[in-house]
Length: 266
Image 1: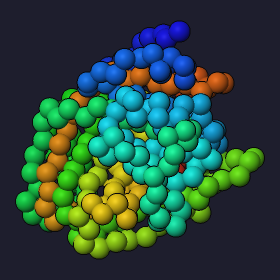
Image 2: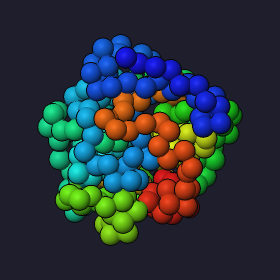
Image 3: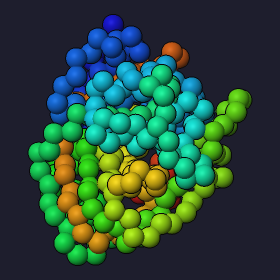
Image 4: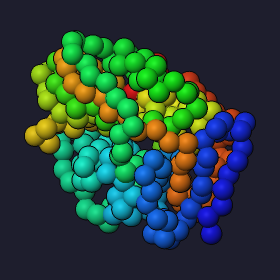
């Protein structure tokens, strides 16, 4: 059975509903609602298996980000299709039955946006998004279609049991840079009080138009493009067996920043 969580100390104005994997199948998809499998705290602790499948999650959203079972790479969902970027930077389409310990999707319905007509840093685009949205306590779905002069990306290699904590995995992550790529960035900006549930701030992944390059965005320079934004104050979270929203109530933001690439998570 689903249950509503209202804890302003933990998640501020974000309304969170928890579900099991079977509940997810019965939860009718809605616009302006984000759907998530697992929690950041569980992932940080090395819970890399998950209950929900990509097929279940994609029934609720057409853009998104995350990872797959055993932390087998960076997940990018665009236009309803899931792509996986492995630790070597190779892009594949994972099978629908692949489980995910952590992923977020939404049925993207643009409510605002803006153009980028000159070379602009990722930090500046983040600031412009925050200014455009205004309210720091809403969840923001982000889609950026454009041309990028440079992009610094990362992914991770599939892990074996017993799984290590996430920060140990990302200490050995693969990072690389690509130049002159046309593609799409997708992701979310989560309110800071939701840090036990998701990555606070901006969490973005890239996929190229030819679907040959992508990954978790650490930094980039936008030549030109269009930023599309969708906002929500509602999040439905599928909790794998043994995972609770109360896990990680004391949030180590330094560890999150370390795992997600340093500075504000990208």
